Amino acid sequence: MASYQGVFKRYEKKYLVSSAQYARLLRAFGGRLQPDQYGESTVCNLYFDTPDARLIRASLEKPVYKEKLRLRSYGIPDAGGTVFIELKKKYKGVVYKRRMDMPLEAATEYLVQGRAPGHMGQIAREVDWFLALYPKIRPAMYISYQRTAFAGTDEPGLRVTFDREILWRNEELRLDAGAWGTPLLAESQRLMEIKMPGAMPLWLAQLLDALQVYPVSFSKYGRAYQESRLPAGRKERVTCA
Image 1: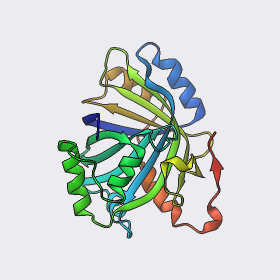
Image 2: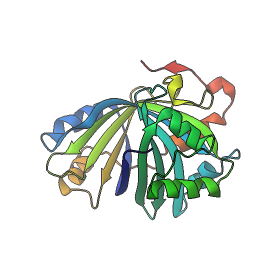
Image 3: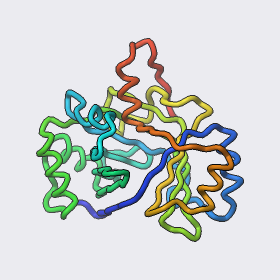
Image 4: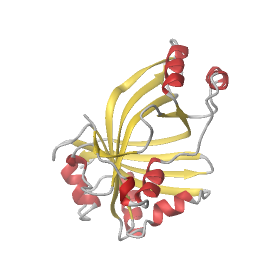
C-alpha cells in the first residue's frame, strides 16, 4: 500500500547550460539557494507508453494539454526498495503532478500486471483511470541521470536542479537493471530546470539574463524517443557509476 501521496502544481522552465555557465551560476546563487533533501542523487525513471508511442508522439506536437506516467527511484532499487509512481500533466504551461510511493515489486505488479495492492486513495484512482484510458500501456523507455538539486533558502517553493550524464535505453526496461544506456547530452552540458509555484523571482530572472542563459523546449523522454528512431550505429552504451 502507498505510504506517501503528494500533489504538486507549479511552473517549470528548462535550460541547457555549459560547464562554464554552470560554474558561474553556482557562484552567483550565493546564499539564495541551498542543497535540497536529495542534494546529489542518481535519478532513475521508467516511462510508460502504448506500443505505438501514442503519448510521446502527442507530446512532441506541443499540445495545450499532455500527460505521462512514469516510475521513479532515487538510486538503483532492489525488489523491496521504495519507488514513486508519478502521473504528470501539463496544461497551458502549468505542471500538475500526482505522486505516491510503494515497494518496487508492488509498483511493478500494479503498473505492468494490473494488480493494485488494495485501496490507495485518490491518486491511485487517477492512475487507475489513466491505465484504463490506455489499456495497452507498458514500459517504453528507461532514463537515468545524475542530479544536483537546490531549494530556495527564503523561497521554499523554488527549486533548481541540474541533470548531467543523462542516459536512455529501450531495452531491459526495469529500474533494478542498473543505470546504463546511450548519452542524451554532450559531456559538457547540463539540463537545468527551474520549478516554482508562480512567477520567477526577479533576482533569478536578472541573473539568467546577465549570464545569457535562455529557456529551451526539452523533454528527456521526447529526445530519447527521437534518438531511438535513428540508425543503430548512432547508439553508444555508457554505464553510470
